[in-house]
Image 1 (cartoon, one colour):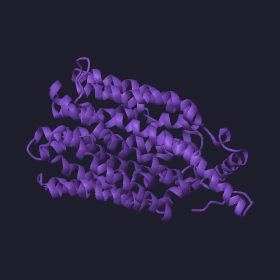
Image 2 (tube, one colour):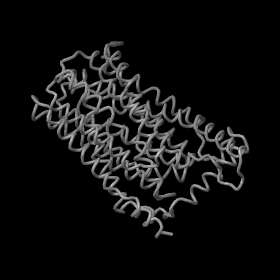
Image 3 (spheres, one colour):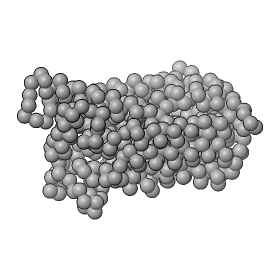
Image 4 (cartoon, one colour):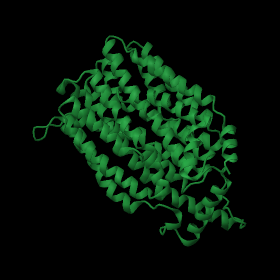
Length: 445
């Protein structure tokens, strides 16, 4: 990975300045964003663990539970693109802080639901509140990190997904056994896991900086190098429309639409499994709650290693498409094996390992693609568009699993539906060609 600054100055001193600046920027920004994503993802998926008790306590059917788990993504979809544009045109720090405080309050409020309507409304509002967080961070990273560094940063950020589940699964198992002030454990699970988002929302206003030129925590020469590096990155990127109207037309180009479709299929498989995983494990194994939440750590532990390895390999080779498609193939294979395992211990564990290896490992390479082919407002709009429409799969996946489980309670046919979805996502990524996007971007000078 090159470390030369984008100036005419060369030599050991210039290399040392570049290395020092990149390291300080990485340590200041990346770990904190990962912490935020751990909290965000936990509040998004903890409904799967709460369902181990909530489903029986409130008398919810699989269909009610699946629709509630998925409706989060309808709210998410409606406000995703505007949120991404606000990060580019207004303030990442202010927008991310607003998102976290709002979603933390609503996540804690989930502990008070009593009816299907309340459950569905709060899940929808939770999605609307969190909309813009993930694509906003992707856009924010383009302000601070060059393309050759971005997959590594994305790897640490998206590592928040397996880390949140590795921490959240056993924590949720413990909270399910808590009974304070007459409230059941699943209610305390929502309440206690929502509070950190509110606290960190306030901290974000002081912890993040919108642009490199405002980074007073960097030395003068470091700040100058970073500003020059990012300006050079912008100049070398294919020209794309920066006005909001023309930029939105970039969203209709075939390669961007192909990324959208691929994301839909992969998200269907990811969330369709992860939000139902505790109940899948219970139905296939008959284990008690504490054992289920402990076993649920396994795929995410494997997933963390897989995600970091795929990101390292993608950055080292510069290849993105295959590094995004192969994890989707692993996910499809694992889901298919889970279906055919028939509850057997050995094949079931192998299936969980394959699923874990494929669930999120595509993310660093996948999200390194849009900023590589578009710039400015067009890139921000495309990232929001891909994530927003793609996350409709987060509605379809859990909802369809609920419907299939309700109609076929004796056999996990939903796993085959999820396996086919992951396979379709992989095929879409294999079909992607960057040249057509680059050509489009060049024509829009």
